[in-house]
Amino acid sequence: MKIKLILLILLTLWIPVTVDKVMDFEIFKTGILKQPFDDTLGYLLIYTLPLLEGLTILFLLIPRMQYYGMLLSLGLMLAFTTYVGLALGGAWEELPCGCGSVISWMNWKQHFWFNLCFTALSGWGFYLVKLKRSSDAGDVTAEGVPA
Image (cartoon, rainbow, N blue to C red; front, side, top):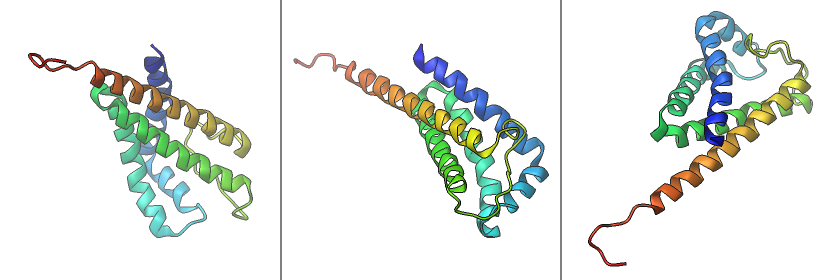
């Protein structure tokens, strides 16, 4: 039950932000290219972020792939949270927000706490799925082989 609730909450994040990136691709692209890093990295992110987020959604929806979905969600959220944390720490002088419509109303501190919560949720979900996965593997016994 806990895993299903975590999956539902994570999907309510990943589906809208991914759809937003794809539907408003030019706005997403412009926002990324305004960020304070090299355009080469920007173009890499423009094409890999929607792909990774889409894979996260797909993997979260497929029971046998939920381990990887949680892992992707955790990795992406760690990266986003680190980026926002660096921004709050003053790593860059000016930092435009390239966030989509789902979280564009947040200031940087709110965004950080939001990301931190979803990072923790992804981590907890990953832990629970990993625990379930290892307990399921322990349930398998070979027939006809004495213990």
